[in-house]
Image 1: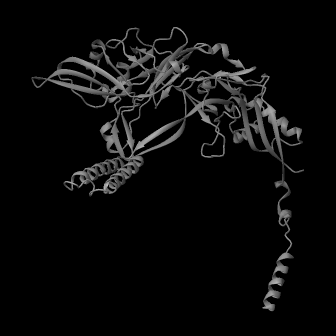
Image 2 (image 1 turned 120 degrees about the vertical axis):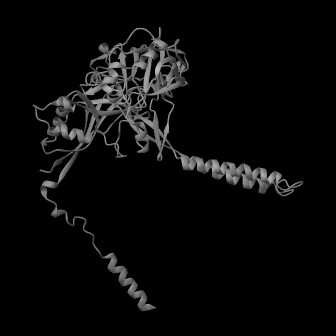
Image 3 (image 1 turned 90 degrees about the horizontal axis):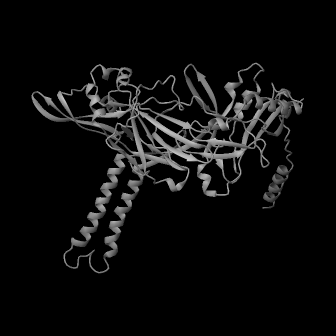
Length: 533
């Protein structure tokens, strides 16, 4: 026992005598790989307010139309162009077709207002025939749509902000589709020259108020391997002569495909058809706000006013911060960079719904006839600020580290326009999918619950209510067991997820602090590393 204690004490003594050299290996690091870290907070003195020119008007999400008037931006208007294309690639109208009716329907998506009291107002829907097709190489979000001046509907459709869009075309317009030929169904360009489509708008409000209305338009959806048809289509009903006998018939249309498609083939391949409507917008006071921001920065929805920070201004600021520390901009490493756009919390806290959820930094890429706005933050990195609104700090502060590093390397003769930072509005769309197998299982358990309940009540004759006095607990236990299983299966049947997407449809009216604000000013915050001398 004494030997054991002595041995243990010796072991402890050996451990306590070990010295840890934290410099071990430090001399093996190359001297040109050692850096000093610095930070800088720099006021942004030049921020421009610009309309988002050449913003693509095509939308794969929703039909959007409506008008809103407010004190800040005046009249803002949305309109949507929809083409009606037959779902069949061959069709026979028979002899002497007689028009019955031509209906249009699409499901509600969402609404957007400047004043919550306007959410349920009644609005007239104006439906006009296009006089020429959309040119997707020239027409953008602020394009003027060429259309007739007469409504082509039977009566005046009305929307109330909470329902689907349903109306009937008048006979004069509907009968034009009897002229569809087989050649028209083989080429979309030829078809749209003959049937360019319709234009949807609402009346402008006389005073402040109004609403933007959004509707879904896709004909099919895919969920967990199942293809289902949605109630977004138009139907032409008519009566015609086939083989000497008059019969009722119909032709279904879907909305705004990008090409002629065989829908049956797509369904067999579990592939959705490609559909894009054309949504345009108008902003009354655009010219009044464009220019260099002073004490305020204004943000409008759609293709309206947004902040833009010139890349050359940023490069000059970062260069000066580096050289002030005795560094060379060519060898500096940007380890963190953030643009802070602060705002003053409004007196009416409820007006915060007009502020974007996300102001995402992007760059504009122009190629031939197309313009793309590409995001600068990496959405796959959870620690990287995407530009989400921070109501506690009253600011938007997106991460732009990689882009600042690239700007810092630009020469004086570089094309700086390609690197300007445009702040565009993003929002998080909710996507819902339905698992048909789980749904059927939920229905099965629901039936079992009720069968268990009724069997327990009526299955035992007189006195058989759940097995006699005191048997009610067993009866309800079986019922609730199956009901709980049904609820579990039902919750598994429907799953939801969110995805960030550019928002060109909703109404926004936000005011941020400008470079000349007496409160917090926009800032560029950077952390950079310079090689040790």
